[in-house]
Length: 349
Image (cartoon, rainbow, N blue to C red; front, side, top):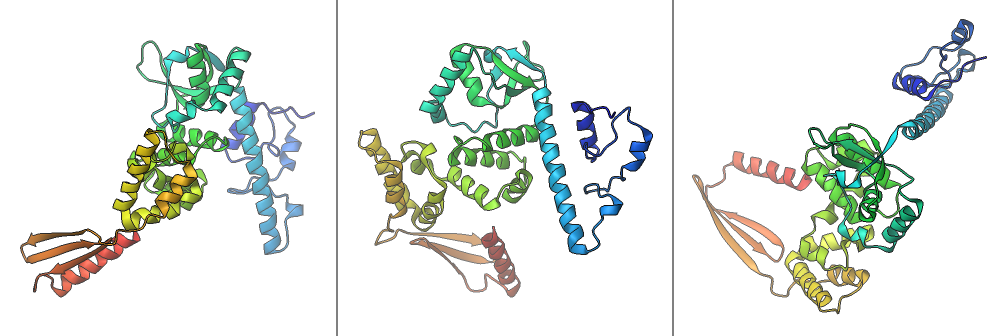
């Protein structure tokens, strides 16, 4: 009888690119080992007698095998996580992650109060959070990898927090936190945008495309979330809460900011003042008011002159349009070509 592989043994096989279902466990007979086909690098195991005869058939079998291996590996990850030892830690010795994406408003919701009530009734969080030790801290302190709301609930209740402890680097922390949060419906577009923006600014990824590819996300959605985080504070503060902003509002409002930014910001400040006076609009009404702002009839014209070794240039901003006028002889044919190239790169960005 074949010995069942332990979780650790199965995980080691996955790390070597092998399928645990088809690998020979320790203690099994050599005959069983010889009967198993050799692993194919980068793909599933295909017995010789079942190898498809056609190219399309081979591809279908390959994809089916890849899918099975992927699902098996995901299941292993869950098993390993559940097998990871947990401990009770003083919640006051656990700090929020520097990559945390929770806006303060998310701790003022009915959902959060319900979470606190559940944890209080259970005597603690039954679903552990994950933390990493902070090197050199004395007494030992920890940083949240994921589970900020559960930690915050335990902290406010004065309860210790049940946690898994593992040392991970910044990028691993960010990716584990993002993947954990992605399965939770309470993460809002603004929170996601702040998370992605912070990762980009701190150099975890060189571009939106690289971040999206690493996390298996659509680059357009990531870009849309980042745009929310980049909006002026005046616009964000016009909403009852930044958490109310929806993805479908991003493009219209972003376009309005691009075409007549000053007017949109001015209107946003008026809406924020109304809200502070107790006459604020609902989030959808704020979006409608800002996205339909019309440019001023007499746009403000701004002129400035730049001087250089080879001449001067006058830059004119007029109603959202920009034009440059160069003095005679300031631009040679070579400089014009370089200017064209620079403008092309700028527009691509």
